[in-house]
Amino acid sequence: SQTIHQWPATLVQPVGSPLSLECTVEGTSNPNLYWYRQAAGRGLQLLFYSVGIGQISSEVPQNLSASRPQDRQFILSSKKLLLSDSGFYLCAWGNYNEQFFGPGTRLTVL
Amino acid sequence: AQTVTQSQPEMSVQEAETVTLSCTYDTSENNYYLFWYKQPPSRQMILVIRQEAYKQQNATENRFSVNFQKAAKSFSLKISDSQLGDTAMYFCAFMIYNQGGKLIFGQGTELSVKP
Image 1 (cartoon, rainbow over the protein chains, first blue to last red):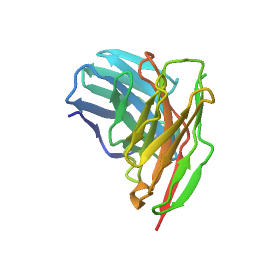
Image 2: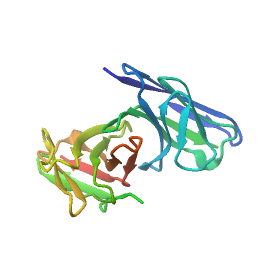
Image 3: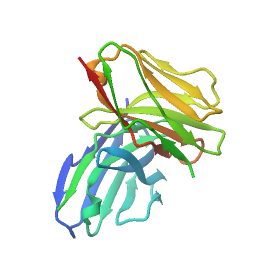
């Protein structure tokens, strides 16, 4: 069965510091991968998605970037965090008719 | 632009009773999928039920069922015999067929099941 991992689970970072959140999937090959952000416990917003290694599509212009260095690895990064980057970040894997989520990372920028 | 609207920010129901959560969506596409996800306090997103737009029959999963009205662009979730463990945020979402599998979410309904 498929499993999706995210780490870290929680993170507190100062404004202006870099960010790297990692997501890995087990039990499937060539999955579509997604990064979502959930602010204030409501509504998920799609940030990035990837249909293959090195292929990244950005949905919302922002301070973040994503990379997919391996088939089942998806990384969310920032060079300098802003206060507005605080939120709950969810990674998901899926195909064209369903999607499954990881446990999420709670990011607090101070 | 595609949108999903959940007009009930909060709802409550007594244990063992039935509750219906509302969802409407807007799209000009004809082929898509609809979903209800549950997010308990742990914040793990859990898929509750899925509906293919081309299917007229409403999807059911144990105590969970949907009322899918394609012409009205409505997709409500009915929870029967509510249990305390059903307490969670519920999100309605849809996915356009063959557009990268991107999910578009509503703002959620916070459901409280009371003993």
